[in-house]
Image 1: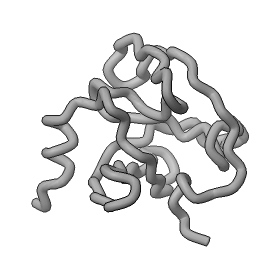
Image 2: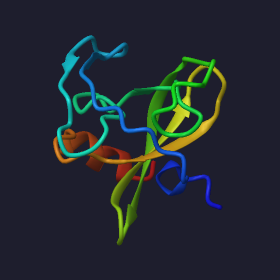
Image 3: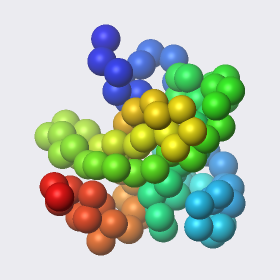
Length: 108
């Protein structure tokens, strides 16, 4: 099985608003799926082992470090935990900042 969180069978649906710990903005519910990251700065938080389970003890910030373009899933953001170094992946949301997504897609 792939390490891509989108393919794991254990998926707990949680779509709730939260305050982003990176940029401080209030992040609204997504409405059509589960909100995983901030649409304004693209940061996430390392709280899940399987999507939505809130079982991860790390709780570090997940910094967006790259972008994959997948024909089936669309844009997939690659994150690296600033605390433990784990790499995570999650599909971009419709309201994500497109300029930031484009910057992630550029190889430096």
